[in-house]
Image 1: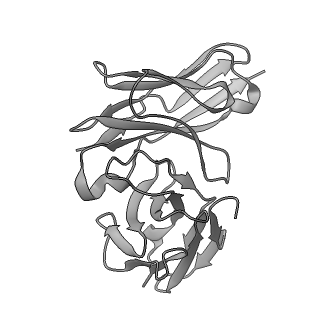
Image 2: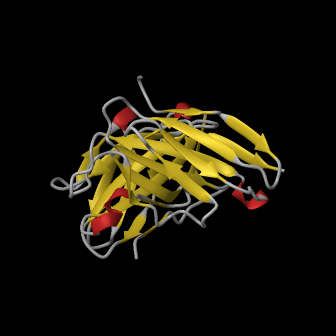
Length: 117
Length: 117
């Protein structure tokens, strides 16, 4: 079965410091991995995705994520956090080889990031 | 339009009533998805359309839930005999097409917040 774990409900960092939001996944085949951000009363906004190739993926707003197959992880990172990065972050996975269920994404429970001034 | 739109943004109904939630995907997107997000949880897959047909409806929780996309564009999620447990944010997403590989990014709308009293 496919699943995603985000082990931290909350991450707090000071502005200007690096941030990491953790994600581990479980799929039967090879994964496609996604990060989304959700601001209050808003839908999910796409940040970045890993499909294949370079394990370090760069996305919107200075975010990046590193795919680690041996650790089945896809942690979201940013070198220098901004107060405006404060939001709810979701990791999601799709299994490459799952027939009719190729459409669905499996999401983690989300991690609330708070960046304080 | 510029993005996925959903109407209404909020819906309050009474237990036992029927509701319809509408999704307008990004123009030209052939794949459309419905997810449900309960408080404190990540989105959970409900149904996925490729064109007019439901390619995967295995996420619908029971037969009170039904969705249509008659012309391959706008979709309506229908809930009969609503229950308090149906209260959640219903998210719609679309993507350009769904190759067998499933690499496409899903772009989400702002959601419809349903409250069943």
